[in-house]
Image: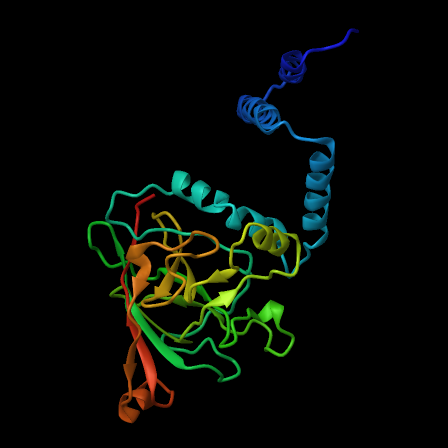
Length: 286
């Protein structure tokens, strides 16, 4: 035992990994230690800053429960979630672009019939979403599943809002034999991510706003194809260029077209006026 130099401390930490049997774990931990130690040296981290960082991460964990995931918000707002997505979902330029899952997905949404509404309380401006699910060669995919969720007209997901019905604005749909889908949703609005915790404190310290542009979430899946996690964004939203989680992509921005026909609205089981969106999702073969 003897006094160690700064470089030797890093070498010792790396040497502690010599007996790791899992090669992927060893690679990840070697890189993590190397970059983390380099970061500490680069900024010459003070003890007070180090402890403040530990307190920040502790509070982040304490904010997490079955209805809120502060660590996902932290990853999203630092651009890490989108970077992981980009690395893991490279496409051939034909398939639909992916984006972040976000912290508000819930499993177990009910499967609904073609053209049904995901709104359980009838609030918000109705929007009819239509299109097809295709493979990259243009073949329609029958029986593809679209798992859909969105925030309400006030920008709140149902697990955030005790006044919303359970599983409101969530549903699963299957495409017909020609790969077509029809979903009645509501026109989404831009909203603030939860900013009353440590992530919000960080954003304010950095001079950043907490807003996401209006969007609807999708997970689109089909046998023999890679599942797609994506959004559709509302064209013209003021936060498209400054999404707090860096999740926007030009190919996912779509026009919401106003339709004032009472006759057409009645065909969808809703009242006029309503919005229409048409979008074809293209899945990569597995």
